[in-house]
Image (tube, rainbow, N blue to C red; front, side, top):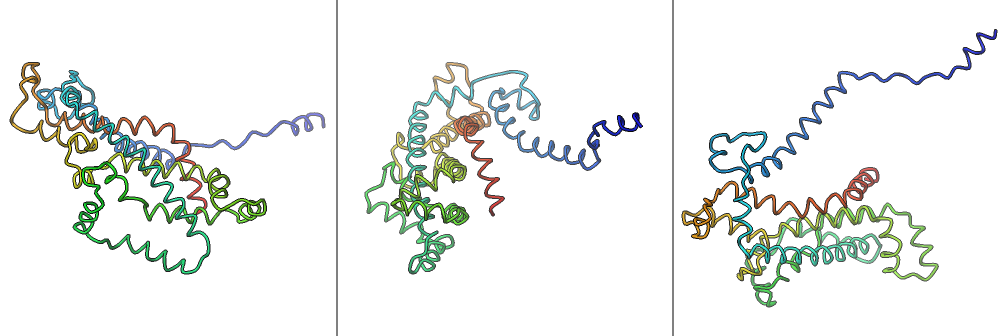
Length: 301
C-alpha cells in the first residue's frame, strides 16, 4: 500500500510535444518567405558597396568580395541632398501632426450621432472613387499662392479616408460608459478625446502615425508638380536628379580627378539605402505599439 501511495503522489509530467511534419513544413515555409522579403534589402546594400567591374562579372553574389564607397560618395557630394533631407523631415513632421489631428477629429465626430451624418459620410467616401482632376487641382494650388511653397506638399493631403474609417470603427468598440462618466464630471468632447480616448487607443495612433510618416517621407508627386526651386525639393526628387545625372554620359570633372566612374546601378541602390535608413531607425522604437495595434485591430475587427 505504501508503494502504491508513493507512486500515486508522483507528479505527472505533461504530454511530450513532438515535432510533426506540418511543423517542419511551416518552419521551412516561414524561413523561405522571410528570405524572399529580406534578400532584396540585403541585395540593395550589397550592390551599393560593390564596384562595377565586380558586379559585371558576378551579378549574383552572397557577400561583397571588394568594398567601395564610391556610390555613396557620388550621392553625398551633392549638397542639395542635405537640403532635401531637411525639407523631407519638415514635411514628415508637419504632415504627420496635420494628418493625425484631422483624422482623429473626423473619426471621433463621425462616431457620434448627429443630423445628416450618413449623408456627409457618404460624401466623404465618394472622394475615394472620384476626384476633381489634376488641372483644377493645379489651378487651385496656384490661386492659393502655394506654388514653390513647402506647404503645397503638406496641405493638400489632409485625411486618408481609409485610416479614418478604421479609426471610426476602433472608437465604436470603446465602451460608452467611459465617455458618460467623463461627461458627468463636466469634461468636454475635446477633453474626452485627448485625455480619455487617445490613451486607450495609443497603439492605433502610433500605428497610423507610422503609416502617415512613411507616406510623407516618400513624398515626391506634389513636389514634382509644384516645386521648381532645387533647394525646396523633397529628398525623393533630389535622389531622382542624382540618379539621372549619374546615368548621363557626361561625368563630372572632379569625379574623374578622384578616379571615380559613376556606377549607375550602385548609385540607385545607395539612394534606396539612404532613403530607407531613417525609417529603419525609427521603426524599432514603434514596433511594440505597431504590433499591439495590429493585434487589437484583428481581435476587435
